[in-house]
Length: 97
Image (tube, rainbow, N blue to C red; front, side):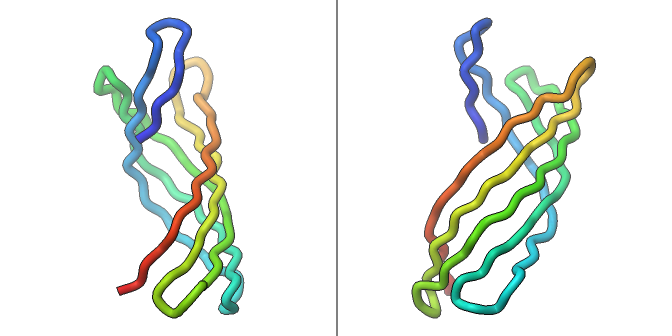
């Protein structure tokens, strides 16, 4: 889910449903990775558009069950006339059960 500010309507919402591979570049406790994929992006009107994402990040294994992760992703949504492009930066904690 993404929320954008818009000069026309105040706010626009975009819902993303996508899938793709994630490749870790090392097996150390600090693991850089790259990922990408394809999926559907749905706006407030219910219009569904095809899009791609590509990114990478770093995961730090703090313990056998807990990892810290930071990630950057570039998104490209195919729309008529011109593509809609945006970037996201995410951080979080991953728990392994």
